[in-house]
Length: 88
Image 1: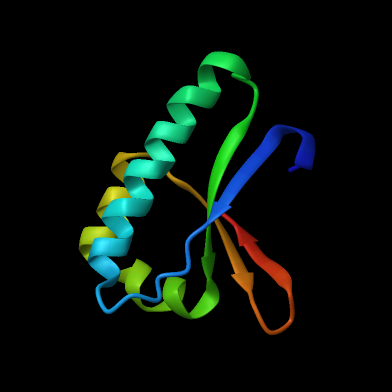
Image 2: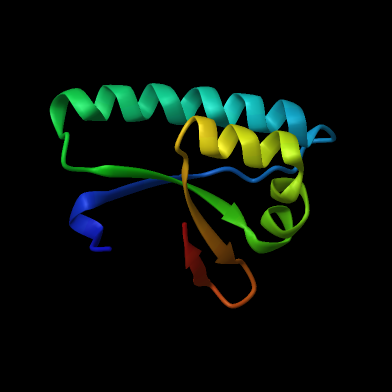
């Protein structure tokens, strides 16, 4: 994946409710993807998520189902090492 065709936004998931944070992130992601599709359709939008959140919260059936249904692309990143672990 080259950066000239990828856009991402980072969601921290630091509030007491990860479900609420996910709903907000999902809405933002879908709106951003739809808007970007109109002006730069070749770009792909990714939701960047920290490794521990991906390994726990994003493994819930409800979340994996939403990721599949809405065709979310994810970047899994390691905050300590400042590296991307996975592009999904």
